Length: 397
Image (cartoon, rainbow, N blue to C red; front, side, top):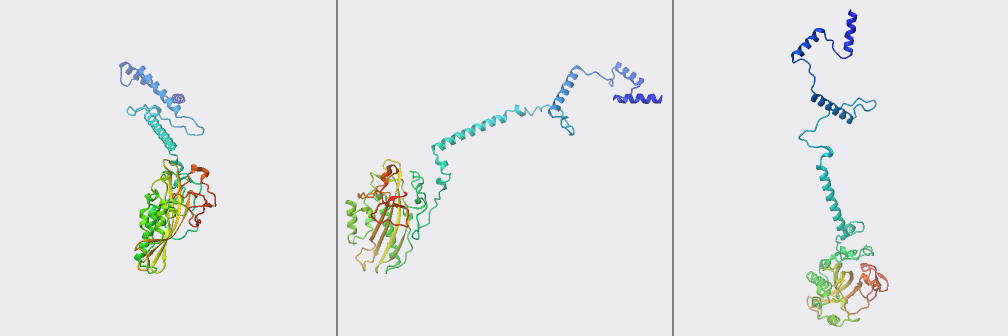
């Protein structure tokens, strides 16, 4: 008996249910007939549908999460399906905020790219100037003043970029030179040759004024009479004032105003802008007792265009000038006026055998007309001096 009871208990536990006695079952039936709260109720049809739907969603979530997959790994715990929160709105690809922002960003970037292409097409120098060899890679810092004779020509590529109206000194060593009169610096004066410090300073200032009036004054460059420069010269110096006046009125081979003045035919060429580059140095020494001599050696670079044109060329003029200031108590001289003791000049990129009193630059479009024969000459090389009157072919301008 005890063995049979033990066998039935084991059988009931094996199918997952608890043994119920006859008395307990009868009580349950009685409660069901009476409608008791503890009696089991059959679920409604709607409840069965909801339960089935939830079970299907849980199974779908399990498949999506890869439940039970993988070899030799602990089964993955499956998160039950949950509905989207009613305040959160749609998620994932169904949301439309980000795609719209992305399309707007792509459209803006496309517009900027097209605009950049158009700007570069109109001004390619915006890109090329930043490339190796472009203008942005060139040192444009101002050179210190020249304090001693140069020993070599300035560095530079003779075949570098040609000048333009916007950059008339492009490709030229003069790009780093001082502008105009700023390039004519005076040495510190001291008493020499029986002349006091103040008199020496006066001679230096007057020589500087002569260089400016003869080579930088706009009226002089336009071919007008250089009245200010002539007024600085001593009228008592024998022969010189008269010779200069005749050269301006009747220029020719024997009397050329270019020996002292830089002049361009206004019907032929004019300055490209208002800047002339200048470099050189000035020294002084004692002359005969009662005088001081001033030595000036300067190079002027003129950017030019034809009248009505936009093609740019450069003419380079180097001048060696020696002046003297004499004490009227010891010389036949006018107080404060200069005497011209010597004047030499080299011209780069100008018609060599034209004696009409003007400089005539060659332009790139002139082609072989600029080939004048003779040795190659670098007009920027201040360590060499070309003999007066000789013609050569400039290697760069």
